[in-house]
Length: 256
Image (cartoon, rainbow, N blue to C red):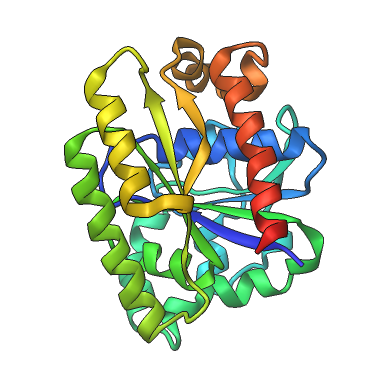
């Protein structure tokens, strides 16, 4: 049965999509069956997995509106080793169309239930805003992985997200919890980042993943080639860190 995780942070520009595609590629590399769900109308996770969002016949938009199943709409990311339920600009209109539908927050959860036995992990890339699309992701998920930079404003973003998760858990999804906080774009030479990292451990303890993703040029270059860094340059420090993170994820889930 698939474990379903949202990659979420209400602060923009913290590396959610980079985390999502590289974790998916890392999990696939260590033998896990992975589905990546792109819930962002920009479709960056789709393109970053080597899938052309403009050529999609069916997308997550069709799945949310009940016009296609996940099995029909998901495509193989050939170079990456996982499946993608892609997104494109059509998804921007789903927000309005979902408003009038029954159980509008539960549409993705219901759709994923049909393929739960086909995957070990489902990773959902959420938009930065708290919208109906993000709510669909949070309602479908067993837990949330929070990528964050070690900067002071990032701490505010995490506390906002934790409050949102508490509200969703109380009203819509009792299973939902923070699985862990992932430190990304980390520069160990910066004293501020070390201080914020220490504060994270003080406040969140074991919820902070041991793996740290370093600031890495090859990870930044990879999207322009339509690939996760793990596939684009497996020998890069950032790529190796994501594969290590994938292993830590599997261990953490087995321990829950």
